[in-house]
Picture 1 (cartoon, rainbow, N blue to C red):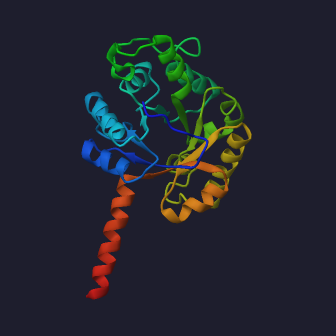
Picture 2: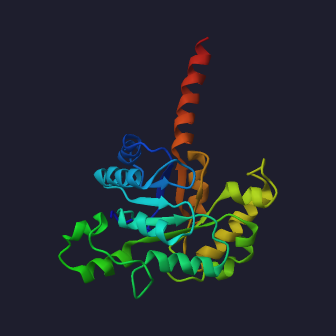
Picture 3: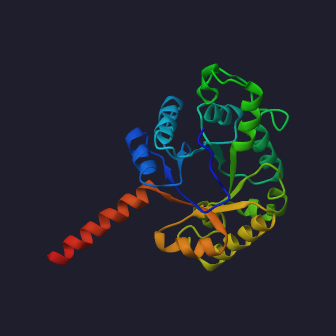
Length: 250
């Protein structure tokens, strides 16, 4: 595991493509962390372990967005060596508490204990007690606020101890609010600010998805310091820049 330092500003990138070369390229390009997206990508568990190795080759923290809130998903991602788990569609305090329990070893949680997986160096760790303690300290728990129901329960959700990052998902949130084709609607933006203020007041790191580099300063000024882009948006923007340059020569 490569720990993710949340005491500072971090820019990460979602990658939902099962390509080790692409993951290592993104990590090596200077991203503070990479999110391997198993929710919206065809990535299986064997491939996931390979992608985490590619992040480690670039000394870059790797967060795994698992498909849903299930014990085996959280367990496998962390046993593969992920720096943390990112969970979509958390709507209640009970769901947030369950996520923390699944991600942490006893006495902080109920994560199944084994020492023969790669996160524990296949049993070669010199001090098993220290490994369990350090894993609990360094494993990041990130949850998504992306529905009206979650917003309605935000005070309870942000009170959960062990949750490190409140990630506001603008796409699903805008759909949940009835603005599927208007993610930039002022009511959606106001809701994002409202959730961010609640989370920051509770001492949580706040994150969200950005559509371009021009948004970074604005979000950072609001205290949102776990910002994410997608590999597709970066590639498409670069392609459009080249096409625009060629078009000007025509």
